[in-house]
Length: 331
Ligand SMILES: NC(=O)c1ccc[n+]([C@@H]2O[C@H](COP(=O)([O-])OP(=O)(O)OC[C@H]3O[C@@H](n4cnc5c(N)ncnc54)[C@H](OP(=O)(O)O)[C@@H]3O)[C@@H](O)[C@H]2O)c1
Image (cartoon, rainbow, N blue to C red):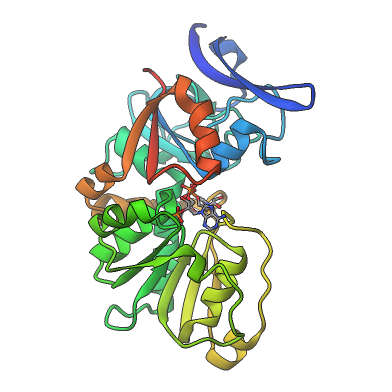
């Protein structure tokens, strides 16, 4: 491969803090890997917010090109499964944390981290979904495998105005479930109804201490918030139903009792998107390409340039970003 330069957002540590800058980088400087990808789009997730601002201990070495997601075209490949010109996507695997990630026009990665772009999705749509949407699908699949019943009570989605939440609301409603969306932002009610939410619940209704067993309300739940919200949701689950827990936007502590588990047979499914094995990944992406209506995906997505990422990273940690953010690394 001949050496060439490309643009990247680079994180460095200065005076104990994290600073970011757009830089021109040579492909020679890219980390090891058997596939070189010409990146078309990346995305912004909560974890990217933590990485870029340095507010979470997400980045494991510096300098780092952050961006936990990328989609693009294979430029060159030493792996038999991936041919030059093929469209691919990548989410997770520690990319953007310990290995240079998607906030760059080029990325060199390990072939086992790559997923072929599913039929029916463009690279831009794949990044509109990104880690957040992929995680929402993993939550939905976990609830389905548990036996979620579309004729039963409503399904709750917390942090509904965020990335995981917005995709979960859209997916569950299109699959026929009655969705109750939990949000702290009254300005998002129309937006959430537009994605398919049947009811809206104010965030503070769940973010306060509840009885160990509250009235049986939810047939299933996707929780992106954690903390007190998750504890309250567990106490309100119907008999034998499940919560898919994936997030910590409201806190990492979980103070609960065993009563929902031992008296109501409630199940708490932990959802991890980062190390999710490829066969399950491919299944989830195929489902996303098929089930998630493209008009609802477009309605929840905004597009920014690489230079806009640092400001947007601050905003997502403050809970000010609605839905999903695609990063056009070539803008
Ligand atoms: N397990 C995994 O593999 C995995 C993958 C992706 C994401 N996650 C986690 O899932 C969560 C959501 O990720 P995301 O990318 O969707 O982030 P996001 O777009 O920032 O969404 C989070 C949403 O949570 C709500 N929220 C924020 N602060 C809150 C608080 N203090 N109390 C209650 N609700 C609060 C807000 O929604 P409203 O304004 O509508 O209330 C916010 O939009 C994050 O914690 C992220 O780390 C985990």
